[in-house]
Each structure stands twice: as structure tokens, then as C-alpha cells.
Image (cartoon, rainbow, N blue to C red; front, top):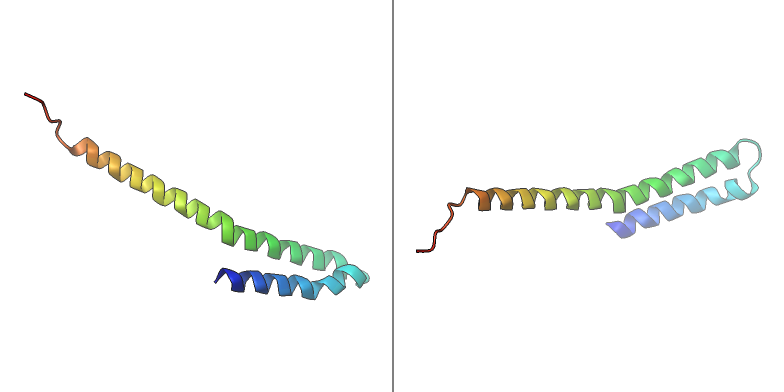
Length: 78
């Protein structure tokens, strides 16, 4: 799925390149803004969101493990 997202982003940016380079009037800034937004959204979706999800799952696992060890009675050596 990552390959499809990246290829879609690259083809969209490639489609805006003529407007960025040779466009006149208001088109180059608009094409630049759209291309930058595509890059930002792609990085956000492929790097930032999975990282936050991983950190959240890891924190939940640590809390569950801590609760499990805290609920066990202490064993006393005789």
C-alpha cells in the first residue's frame, strides 16, 4: 500500500511541475502549495501516524504489564 501512496503523490507532483516551472499568473504559487501539501500529507500518513500508533500501543503494553506485576502478591522466602 505504501508504494501506491508514494506513486500517486509523485505523479500528482509531476503533473504540477509544468505549472510550477512555466505557469503564468497565479498558477505557480497554487501548484507549489498543492505539491507541498501532498508531500506533507504523505509524510504525515506514512511516518508520523504509524510512529504515534506504535508509541501508544507500547505505552499501553507497559501499563498492562505494570498493573499485572503490581497485582501479584509478594512471595516471601521462608
